Image (cartoon, one colour):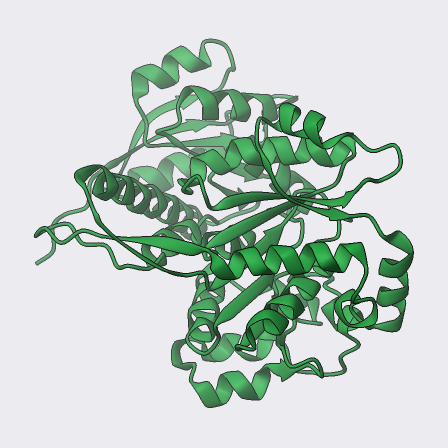
Length: 418
């Protein structure tokens, strides 16, 4: 018989009414959760939450007529040990990204059932438990091993900075540099355009793998994955929005684990929408390339993401800032960017808008169409450095503390945000 799970203390911050009553009834019906307090006013919020000492804080998107986004930001800073879950009024990606950047570990959409609520509480509880266990193992002392990089995810909190273009050309550069199996995976589940960038005509997408995630084998994977004329393999995002909406973090995790077995490098274009699926793509990576451009709006969003990434327990070397379109006319200088972000830029990719646009319109990546472009040379240099890098895995050999020498535990945890 397994050990009983630790009881999780929950503080609820929501207006009086039917939703509050529904939440109260659901939490009180389960012995694994204790309703530590129900708060309805922003006044003395910090003091009352401190006294309640919660493991989870469930907070509505609005309190009265006042948005709680600033409260979420403040609570995430004051109580980093408490996992914040936000109740959102709709499935708007802008709202989701705002609360995630403010520090929420999960969210739930109204209207919701008691089953949905309890499932979300359990997932976030598991997230924190695994994350704390991982930290405890490292503090206790772990045996470390190194291996070459395998999975590289590109992400930007701001759209239009060139993530997809960089991802496709980086995959081609890795293939050219190594001659090994390279998979380019489209992690943008909504409105991806990797098929346009690569001029690929195929009906096969990641949606074809989702129904078989518990039985992925080499034959099925290579039946769905397409091979590009350049030699790289490509897994496109779903073309059907309903299929994209049905992809859960757990399913996405299993697909990533499945394809990692058959490729030397997996390059993932995670796009710019920060959702629980995106966090799964980032957690799965040996290196997370955070793409930005030298304009204030992109840099502002990049700075906010750097702050929230610190709550994800990533090692220092995992996050790498890539400055795309460097030298943009009127753009912020590199030294000023590093000073503003308090983070060193790892690589710069020169601006070449004319050739980038021609490549996109012709469906021929710059690596193939303009191999002598300064942009391509910079991407080749980045690929060369990535191939020479090693990533560290931790394995505790003492009895009672064991961690697989992969990222599976952290990925499983962080993939269950919603």
